[in-house]
Length: 364
Ligand code: NAD
Ligand code: GLY
Image 1 (tube, rainbow, N blue to C red):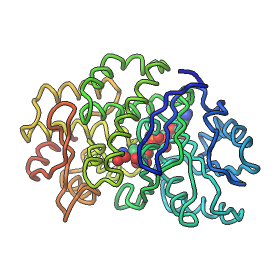
Image 2: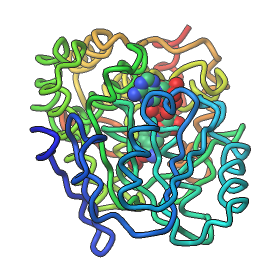
Image 3: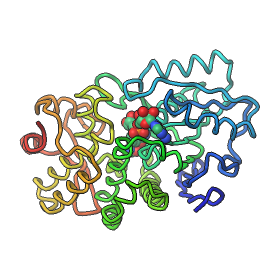
Image 4: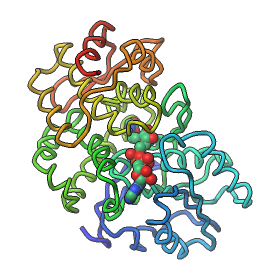
């Protein structure tokens, strides 16, 4: 792997297929940015933290293809994944008179990626966009698969659209500046792929966690590639989540309740997912699907990844209230991603009493 020959994972969606490029140095590689949609103007959407780190380099790459490059800096943070940020993008695009061929580049983590994708889906009924993810979480999950959204105070990612990018360009070098807490949050989504799809990968993560913490590029490249392969395999079969894709939300039903209940931004998304996976694994065990030893194994790995394994004391009623607005809920009945056996998951309802037992065991 080098900057000229990145790892490439294809995501097969017919005439909307696209590539995920993974490698060190991609922000400086002109081939990574070759053959993107032509337009007069490219727009980099980023935030105040990422802009000073990487916007100039991306801008330099883009001037080879686009005669004008505009940069929009959003406020940083999950709390700003909202209408105000979305409107700020529309204000700039319309204010500059940009047409429907304009290409948006999402430079940042999942927050920037999700907002920019939704802006691209809806500006003039759709303009092309490219994901340039700069967090581990965004490289292994949010930049891939076309889910775009903003939050609503009553629920996470409640307003959005399915809209696929033209390409994902994941430069592993950008992870060098990522704070440790954000690296851990990304590891939660990496770990997720083990229980739902690939037990061998879970063992690989257990064996390579120290290398990932040392930000070893070879280990990171494999973790990002294998995660994207699994995600591409799932999304290729069920782009709009009519079934299988829901397994990608392992740990998220509990996790989203924590995020919303604590106020967006207090817990990182990946922290909610890490703790949520412990709860969802325990639920799977209490439903008789997996044994206690597997729950303990997953809990140990999540702890080693420096993620929380106990949820806040919101109270079971409040957890249940938030979980009932989860997008997987049907007619007010909460549906959980459970592990049927190591490397295999499904979605099903669970009796409130069992969920309350899980919450009692893992919160407060
Ligand atoms: P984030 O976008 O908030 O980024 C985390 C922090 O790291 C931010 O402060 C950001 O400014 C900073 N940052 C980003 N890149 C950096 C770098 N290279 N160096 C230093 N700092 C950097 O959070 P995230 O964890 O990337 O994404 C979480 C979001 O993704 C949530 O809103 C979640 O709902 C969403 N998500 C979406 C999907 C999807 O399929 N669309 C999947 C998973 C998560
Ligand atoms: N992160 C869940 C999904 O993309 O479906």
